Length: 335
Image (cartoon, rainbow, N blue to C red; front, side, top):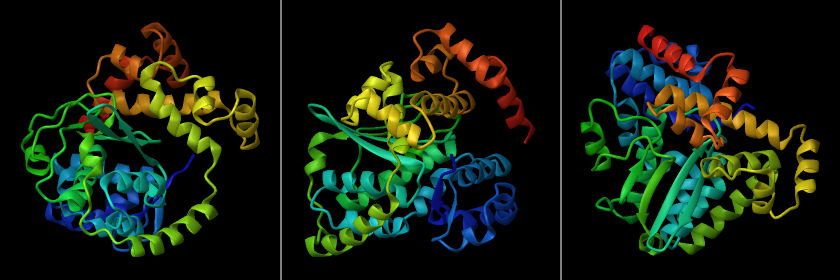
């Protein structure tokens, strides 16, 4: 499936590329992204193409913190009407739920989920496509920037989590995040105090929020989110638990298994197909962008054993997971 995002996701790319001696237009062309996307924030362009642009920029320039540098330049206004709406919410919890509801307007491949425990809250960010280190750093930096714009520049999360392995240099993380994140974790996101969710947002204006919300509700109604997209989001959330079954997903969607199968069939797909494609994308990302053991990759993909993962991987990629990782490392060294 092809996912689209607003070209606002490239804000700051052209300027930084020039600073580090890159031709941003050549990189865009190589990624299949129109040149106009570098200056017009409201075009709909390929989400995967944007991702390739960030990874290639870092590799070709040798600027290891390319994504973080972009994140430093971002403002709440860069996410358009979503930014305006969340600024007018009464507290962080409602702001985050608003982002979760409308993030597809910014990028169809992204989804946000809020989980609350006794004292902690976890803001999980998932993507339906393989996500590299630069994209991870960018999305975490932007998320942190958004939350600081709502709660104040001195606000800090308890921790930030990345799927990828720790790079050799960590200074850039300390500069942007104020701390070194946790690497090779099970998800991308932020861990915060649960009490922070109820922190009031000083800029809140209920009247303005109501006006903007009406517009976005209309946009959402026109979109008509496919059931397959909702299933894909739930699969990404449930895979690491080892309990990602069709019954579990149907339960989360408040429907029975037969109804889920019937509605997915009407969309031309099935639960097993979505599960398989999601695993493929996640496997590519983990093997390319992390040094996690094969057992660790197998666990994150929800397999019952390493042998089951190995058998599945060979059928899907016509090679072993170890060989795939080695090939990706050779390609990276050659670029």
